[in-house]
Image (cartoon, rainbow, N blue to C red; front, side, top):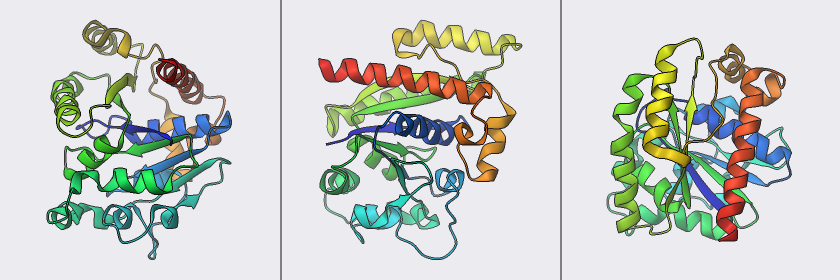
Length: 259
């Protein structure tokens, strides 16, 4: 079975999608077979990989509702070893449709266990809310990576997120763990970035990755070209940061699996 990692934060605009697609790309580059599941109705992970949302194709909405098998919704990207299940705007209404489904919190987990056995990693790009969709992602996951923007307001919601993770661990998924916190949009010229970093490292300790993701215009430009920044501009600071982050993440994964 693959290791399933949810990339989650209740706040939007903190770098969840960017982190998901670039870590997946870096994993694939070192030979890991990676599946990204785009669970955000906005579909930014799909757009970031150049997948058009025009026309009807099986999506994460269909997988979540049990309309199609997970394997039928997989789309291969231009990156070898990297495939994705695209999102759909219909996901916005999936929570209402799941209300009467038996064991609705386990819908995604069952689909992954049934059909994603040939992958090393499944990365789930979560929406910026604690909806039933996000609950499905956390119930399916072995671990959670939390991107945290280096701004004061971004700190406010993280304690609530950790509380939510602990609640889901207690009620639905005892194996769920906080894999790590990654600081994003870091500006070394800005004292606030340094203050947020210090506060986060003091609170979470070793759970915070050593690598920080800088503010970088190439990271911002890449999605409009339908590419992760690692393909758009491999040599930029943002790409090199995501390569370093992925190295740290895989090292932690290796240590976890060795326990």
